[in-house]
Length: 340
Image (cartoon, rainbow, N blue to C red):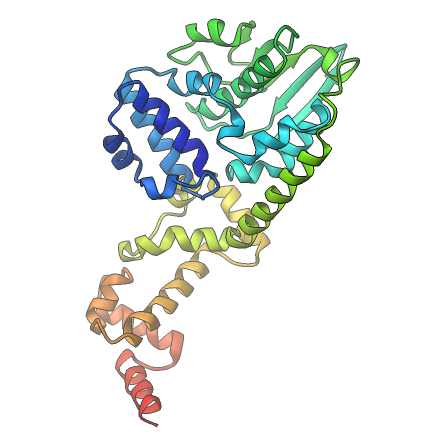
């Protein structure tokens, strides 16, 4: 996900008395990673930061307050795009287009947000998959809609009601003061009801922003292309496996959770790329075995340990399957090639 959101939350928590060094340690993040708001950080690191910040401040509503108190454009190019969009419909289209620049998340459907009109009511439906007990993503999502429109269009009604699928969180009492609309918990969907004026007579935002919109979207398109090329599911899985190769047998469930998705979603995305989790793990072990031995800085036994094999004999069998030779035989062959 984008580092800008973690950097902003970190600063917010520190301003409220949380120790910066302890938050970074708990999240596994570094100041270097958070310097550029467009840098990509692990979703699990951001989630750990939220938990550590709440624990340090004793405020379970910290993320919610942070969302209401900050501006999206200060932490993501998406904020600039939304504020230079032509209408509410247009801004939601842009959110769906660039949602991967915020975070890689699991969705119920092709788009994150849907503008739904029914029975004279207008709702913004959030199709984010919400794991049991997790309300932070939805909570922050709707808080961002309400706060940005409240700040950008003071005096004009926007939010009318809020439905969320989760039970009341520990800070449910804060919802009334912050959202200022009726909230229904344990609802069948996550949706924000808005005033219909935003898709009728007041559908247009301030004019004269087409040039700025073009500049921002060109930058966002470049970032999206970079994210897409560098964050195919296989590449993301390899990046997640690499520091854990020494553990041996890896849990696909745990890895999927660290990547912010379910096991089924990870399986489906890998299948669409024509590869399995086991094949990626095996291929990465193969590649790293050649790197370790080729550098001639570790022994066969040490390479076996680094790659997560419980016994050197198991590593030798796997190496023979990969290369057709034993590790020592392969090393002799490479020595001969180098001498020639």
